[in-house]
Image 1 (cartoon, helix red, strand yellow):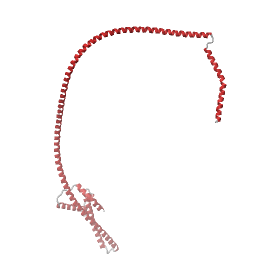
Image 2: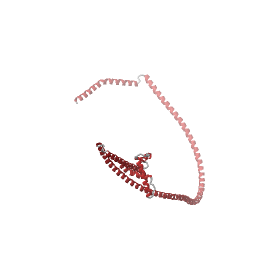
Image 3: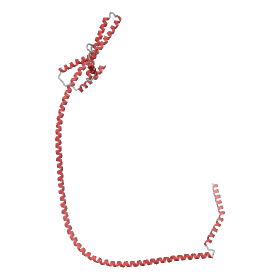
Image 4: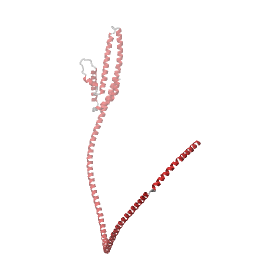
Length: 366
């Protein structure tokens, strides 16, 4: 801190010393410049003094000339203003003459105005009388117009009502004709609906009878199928027993050939009988399946293509055809014995056959 103060003091002293050293030179220069300026302002010789005087005289002469020119301009302006004053005085005189003339005319006009006012008062009185009469006439006219407007409105109202009544009459007439046509049309539709309803009732009755017949046939076919299945089961049991018997006989024949020829022949006959019985059962099952499947059955198509061979043993197709012929004869006899009924609709037959064919087909397949 002290060092900083010392440095500042030393700097200040050094600056003061430098200022003291340069101050004399600055002072001498200032004195020299001041002397030159004073010498330049004060003339030194007589010629310069004379020149200054001449300059002052010239400046004074110029000022005097300027004043003279200003005086001349003022004189011209004064002359112009005097002429303007003369013109304004003449104008004032003319205006005074005009005022006098207008005053005379004003007096005449005032006199005329008095007479006109009197005439105006008379005219106003007449105007009031005429206005009163006009107001009365206008009131009467307005009253007449109001009456005419009310009459016109009443007439328009009456005419619009008449047109509305005419339109309503035409509309009611048209509606009456339309309703008549609609009633006739509804009567025809009612007659047609009654006829159609009677036809539908007859169709329903016929369909019910056909359905009852088909249900009876279905029950009969179920019974027949149960019998066929029972016979098939019994035949299978017999076949198994015969097969076992044939095997036993075959074993015995192999053991004792000469003595067992008769037994072998008996076994062959039993096997033939068994095959015959099984063929009958298969024909019955195929015939029943064809009846359940209906007219579009594949069995029917195969039977249609089959041809009997005369003298040959009956094949499965021959047996099915025989069963079909026997069933047709039985149905014909049953139909003759029962009351005549209309054949059922194909759609009902197919639906019943399909419904019954599902479980029976599965049973036959099993």
